[in-house]
Image 1 (cartoon, one colour):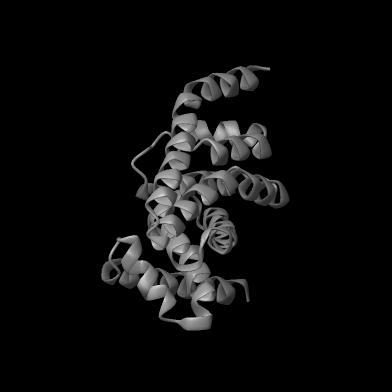
Image 2 (cartoon, rainbow, N blue to C red):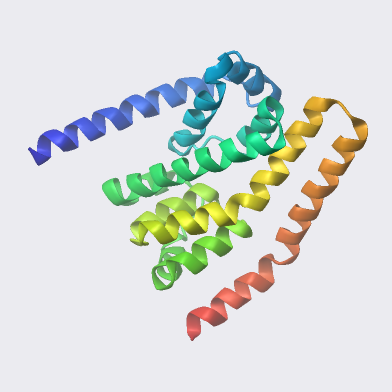
Length: 218
């Protein structure tokens, strides 16, 4: 029975992976093109957007591009909500894949130093996942995969992911929404907000790393 279930899981994952790969090849990475593709589904557009976001980790589709497309398609607050829902589900997909299939999916990443990251996350899953969501020290999907390998408790992983991604989700969707309005002042304001958040992440990257290192030694 377990073998039968495993075969079905593998078949479903391969089907999703194949579909997502085709989408990745045929849909331009331009947020505007993705926006046009999404809104063409009418009232189903939010569902399509969330589904695309959910299975995005399987082909490492850029999260920021999809988030900006969400702002273009739905506006700042609705786009932010759909992004948070989709990104949380995508994190759960990566988390599940890691717990089910182990380290094989990590070969997609350029960084091979995930063992150290795994050791840190194993010590305090909520703290490290939250920090790595707020300040993107490493790839979003890599954090999700490694959290699955590190056996982080699911409620802690979900809470840290949702809370940690809010600033980035707002910035990306605000930028996309501002571009959609065509209002020059709004676009400039959005770019300033985006730049400030990026600058904060860059400036505090090393201090956060040092704090994590000190925290690890305690």
